[in-house]
Length: 177
Image (cartoon, rainbow, N blue to C red; front, side, top):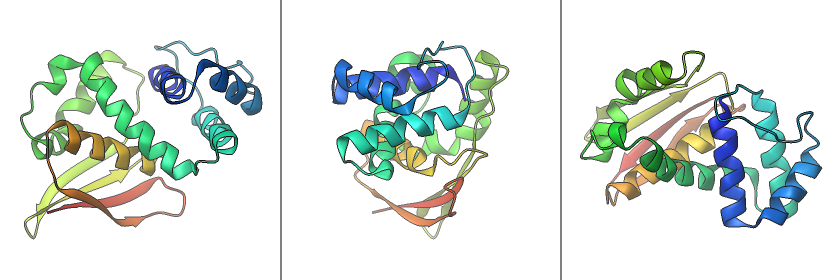
């Protein structure tokens, strides 16, 4: 997993809680690198899961809720970090339909060793259906990213979970009116 995501996770916890909270999370997670992440480095997904688990335990907020909130936050950060990519789209649906073909291809250009999830969006029965497939159990972050996308574009539709694998590495969402 790219260090950028770890750096943004630490920033998220600092902004939502405090730097002291982050120190407590890092201590509780007991990572071998003491949460020293380079934005361009690659780290085990398990490290992120340890951080989120420790944050959940310390805050009392369920892991799924933390992950969804982080996904919403992360979408906002992507708008700041990658405005040239994000400004290419005028609607949430147009962005979601191009995650796989455009956005993740650009990610691979910026970070050749990146292995982004497979995200596909299609219209089915007048609604947008988004599928997330990954080797990482981060479906709740994907849900938060989609919520952040809808909010960014002022799209008042809601997101519903259609299904999710037990491990959280695959999920289907419906964006409904």
